[in-house]
Length: 233
Image (cartoon, rainbow, N blue to C red; front, side, top):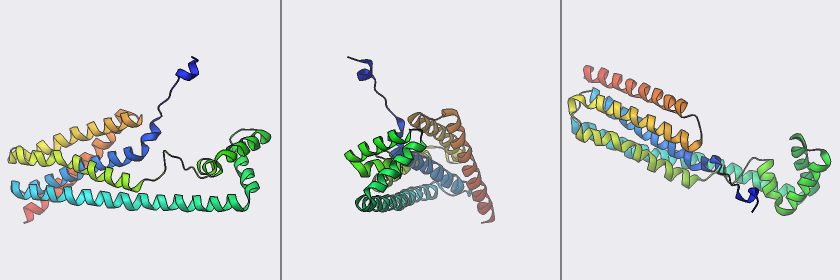
């Protein structure tokens, strides 16, 4: 058996569709719910009031994430479908021009003109629309829009991210609740940053620092607002 047959590659780009939505949902769920809990706790609310606010934030946030992702990714999907329909019509009306267009793309990438045309002709003989979708429009099986997948992933991971702060609201001492939630959230964010970076093959340290920084900013801001309004009231 040749070395070529034994060689296999796993490219992380295949995860980009669900990974983006999962990381965004979990981080948003953790940060927004923790910040909400800290803000309400800073206003010296009761444990019951803090818990109700947190649960409401979880439900509203998960639904908002699902709707937002679905609408956003659906818009991308509609654009892709429109481009593919236009490309299909162009292939049917002027096939030679489409061959020349694809050959020009390959020539711009470094192939000589004759070889560029040969490659274009052979690829289009097998799958003309697929060749143009991939090399002209930049649409592939890895990057194509999947609205339902994005919506469900975002909603589920938001809820999972929002769960730990609510558990702390029920279990942690009320007088130290803000500190417990802040520390647990910071640890969770760092873990999510490391997990997302590892799954996507990115720099782990940079990702951890990025999510931790913005998480601290969000929690500090809501704590300050809660303390301000709690004092005023």
